[in-house]
Length: 180
Image (cartoon, rainbow, N blue to C red; front, side, top):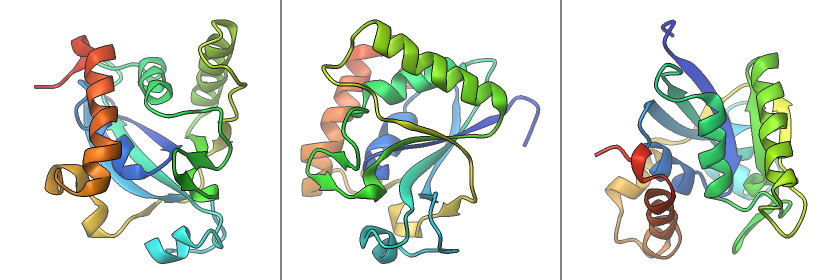
């Protein structure tokens, strides 16, 4: 990892949705879908989907802090998922879809708490934010077919109905941050 690179590990529902947005965000150097926060080493997608492993579907975002601050990255994150529903995003239900920020430093944890306080003080949601803020455990990359899923499967039903609207919302809210 270079001096001009940081990592953010974020869970907010299906990792396909988060990955599709973050790949289009200026300052992002790369995104990998994966699993974190569970008890089993090297879990499979099927094991995580069962809910038995305790892992969350997450994305590992590598970004250039000179171009994109961690705070702004988190603001995008909170705009593209519902941080008020425990263990659920839309029709995706289970602990693997929880809202979670896995931090890599005390500074990241403090900033995550500050952004949650900002959201709460501005009453951006009708319910309290339930996003967990936890130290980053081991990250396990998801299977190859999950990586860059939306780009490779834009016409798949889930992508058209769930992922594409999140990408459109991101572009509308953060047009100045859209990567062409």
